[in-house]
Image 1 (cartoon, rainbow over the protein chains, first blue to last red):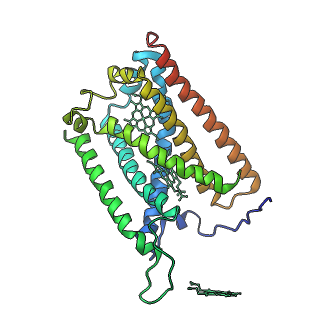
Image 2 (image 1 turned 45 degrees about the vertical axis):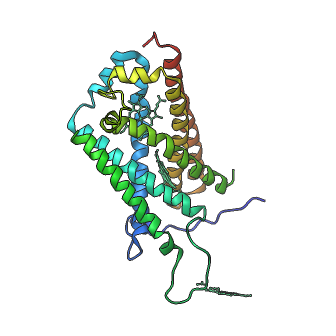
Length: 145
Length: 125
Ligand code: HEM
Ligand code: HEM
Ligand code: HEM
């Protein structure tokens, strides 16, 4: 059976992606997930060509790398690392919850309400702590060691 | 293909990238820490010496091809989803589907060619 997907007008547009209103932290986590996903994608598409220069041998690799030895590029690379640490750990949470794990059992909504968003929150916080630790180690490695 | 199937592969690709990009990032960025643990190569990881040493190892060739494919699918599918949220016309959606599918395939072939060529032609580089 062919299912026609109904299209509705997206009224909020890009503003709807960024602003989370008074929804929980997860709503902002989503905006950041989207931003980091697009950032890594942009880097990655260029990365395929830059690392592809190694097919031309050492010289071609070294001349490609010579363009990236500035502090600005180093900082850019660090941003990619930050985006990766966040996107990877938050993505892990999304995979776990979207497959239905760690959301608890369905139950009657009796006051005080506990929704699945609340139930996954310890996972969210825990994984963000892991991301922070990775970022600290990465930052130390980038700039101090 | 059904949207839910495409989405399922997006999620699976995410898990695959988690492993292989995690490895790639640790090797490329935590080199001092790895070196400290006795696992690193020492020295600059993006130096020609270090790069071509890795390029001649089957392990890197295979993991790069896996990462290349998974990241292209995951990233382009994700981007496509974001674009589709903007209430595009059917025609534009079709154009995007073809453009991303063919573009992704072309990049995959190019990247695979690079890693495989270098692996089998160590003297050429
Ligand atoms: C036009 C028809 C109906 C409408 C618009 C409607 C709408 C709703 C809404 C808005 C809720 C609250 C959901 C929530 O916030 O959790 C609800 C709950 C519920 N509805 Fe309906 N409903 C309809 C028909 C039915 C029928 C026919 C049944 C049973 C045979 C039913 C059984 C229930 C039950 C048991 C709940 C409570 C679920 C729970 O929260 O534990 N509903 N319904
Ligand atoms: C490190 C491992 C990664 C994991 C675990 C991961 C996981 C995820 C998950 C679970 C989603 C959301 C899917 C959904 O809610 O339906 C997602 C979205 C996305 N990811 Fe990744 N991802 C990873 C790496 C990457 C990489 C390397 C790229 C870029 C090449 C990327 C680009 C994107 C984009 C563009 C989106 C769409 C964002 C949106 O719709 O708001 N991700 N990722
Ligand atoms: C900013 C951090 C990064 C650095 C410093 C880096 C460095 C490198 C280097 C030096 C190579 C060449 C091969 C080698 O030396 O072994 C390479 C290849 C590769 N990298 Fe990265 N990388 C980074 C981020 C990423 C990200 C975010 C992705 C995925 C989304 C990625 C995916 C790949 C792939 C697929 C290849 C193989 C390319 C091919 O097939 O020719 N890298 N990377």
